[in-house]
Length: 398
Image (cartoon, rainbow, N blue to C red; front, side):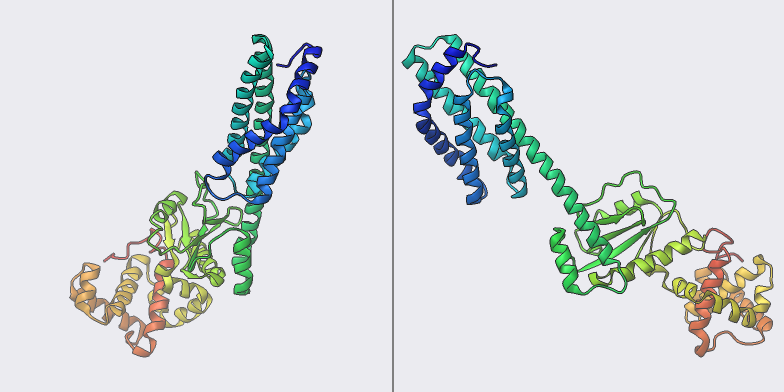
């Protein structure tokens, strides 16, 4: 609403203009008391900017009496810029909104005094008040829009910087620590002591992509970088992994070796995709070290096992699997038939019979210390790639 009567508007402008310095001083005093002196300290440049805009607001209001809202375009631009600057400096929008509210209160008090002094009508006082609050409402809206727009830009910029940091961390060869520290500061990301990379199964489509703020994600490349995964504050990690479904967690590494964690997580995913490891939950790569090591030399195992274990591999699965499983468990139990039988839930004599049968088929004993590690890795791979570890023939079959 504006003062419609132009002669009256000009008269009011002339009456109010001499009192502008006093009005501005009173407003600035209130703003200093209730805005700048409370909460975190305000930068001197921003303080001056707020005061300058207040001065221009008061002067604009007096000069524009009788005009429509279109005349306040320049002022709304100033408030939009002021709101954007508040966001850039990390100040709350409440400071600006409070300054506007205080300005309105001071102006209304002065209007009421002037109404008595100049014998204004109720209609004139109401018109002035409506014009003032209309202007302040537009200013507040412009400030809020500028603030929100700048926050959006900052969030976008921050996200881009975090994406650059994320890509840098998994690059091979690893970047130098100085570069990582610099990029982390630019991305407003606190450097952790260690990280673990979680690789997602290709077909995984998490129902929600909402993550803790310090987790860096690349949904296209299907991996997440989790800071300090083993710290006490990571009690949300199991729930996150449950929500993600099929995933592989790489080993915890110093931050400059995040690429190594990603590499082993993806090796684990590859075994899940082949059905060698279960793909219905999240797995830790460190829990499958022997299998991952064997997968790296799969072609070598295929060659050597064909020569060394050929008679066993020629058997039907129902006969082959119990023998291979017994041999691997026996080696894992330190050549103790009693413990092996307990673990496999068979009698120790059954264990001894199977070991003799293996010796007969292969023509040699299979507990030579020199070959133990190689044989255990080979058996681990053969049993899992034979479908045993992925839901095939049970490991404890008789």
